Length: 136
Image (cartoon, rainbow, N blue to C red; front, top):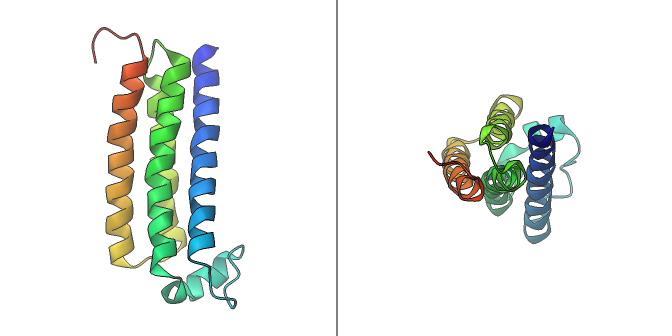
C-alpha cells in the first residue's frame, strides 16, 4: 500500500511542479492576447508567436516535474524504486506526447528532451538516496 501511495503522491508532486513552473513562465513571458492558452487549437495555430522564454519554462517544468515526482516517490516508498520509476516513466510519456499534440519547433524538442533526461537522471539519483536499498 505504501508503494501505491508513493506513486500517487509522486505523480501529484510532479504535476504540481509542472503547473507552478509553467505559471511562472506565463507570468514572466505572457502569451500574446490573441492566443487562448486554454485552447489547444489556438496554441497549435500560433506556436510561432509564443514567446521563446515561455517555451523554455515549459521545458524546464517537464524536467523539474520528473525530478520532484521521482524524489517524492522515493522519500515515501523508502524500500523500492518502482514508484519513482513509474512516476518518472509516466511523466516522460506525457511530456513526449505533447510533441504529437502540439507541433513544436525542433529547438524546443531538443531542449525539452535534454530537460526530461536530466530530470529523470537526477530524480533517480535523489530517489535512490532516500531508499534503503543495498544495491543501486
